[in-house]
Length: 323
Image 1 (tube, rainbow, N blue to C red):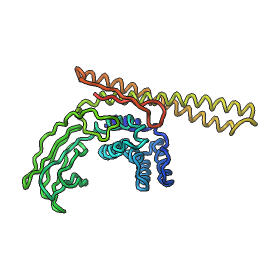
Image 2 (cartoon, rainbow, N blue to C red):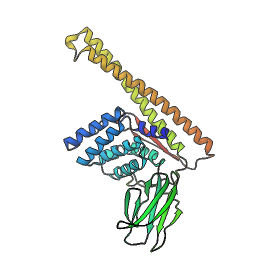
Image 3 (cartoon, helix red, strand yellow):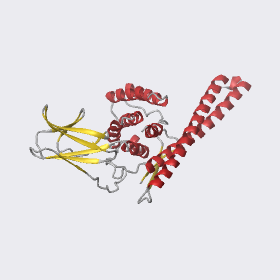
Image 4 (cartoon, rainbow, N blue to C red):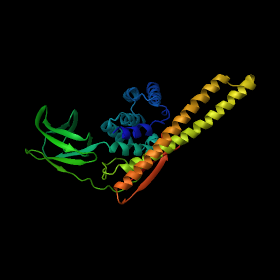
């Protein structure tokens, strides 16, 4: 759904330039990717991040790849990269942005299904589409696009048989492979995980993915609030630049730069402030509507939690709710 893709894209719109990488080529590519994202050129930004990761792979770069995949609607790739990045819990960049990354993961999970393949048959491996998942048993459920999924069981390059599975968003199914038997498919209900110590080292498939609206509502309100705060900051910056422009007209000798440069900066700050106010207001209103919609669909909420953390650009706050 485009509306959900927009939430993910806007949740990562206010990303500041990434911290310096050790390799100067990777550093330049990360800076270029961040600049391209700010201009809405998501595919070009993804290419830059992938190139940077090929030169120097870091959890920060992998997280940027996952966020950009999410903005493009590549949900499986977004899940794989965000999960990989968030597993690096000892990385300072990941730890400082955990809440924001976790909120982005909530949106990504609302667009994928999960498949768990287990069995006892030796010498065979599992292929889903073009993805070779390796030999069975496969320890963790894998994220796949919802819909019809063809699970191929292969020995070397020979396809022994294919099992077709229908998956819904948020559903986890299990394919069991037994010795020299055809596979059986049965629904697999995820168990409710115990709350892990923060930060968590793994992202489990959602146990209650049938109710995404509350999470979307709180995420939208959190992102909208961050956008409004960003608008306030740029509004203050605009007033400052306008004052400097006036000072330059009165005392040119004491001015750093020219009045025209400060006027251009003031106009840019004003534009960003207006866009931030508009986007923030729309997101907050949309989040409220999502919560109202969720309230109409659900008579009661058994449990809820709300967490907030710093936004990815270091300005404002990022909030997410789980229900």
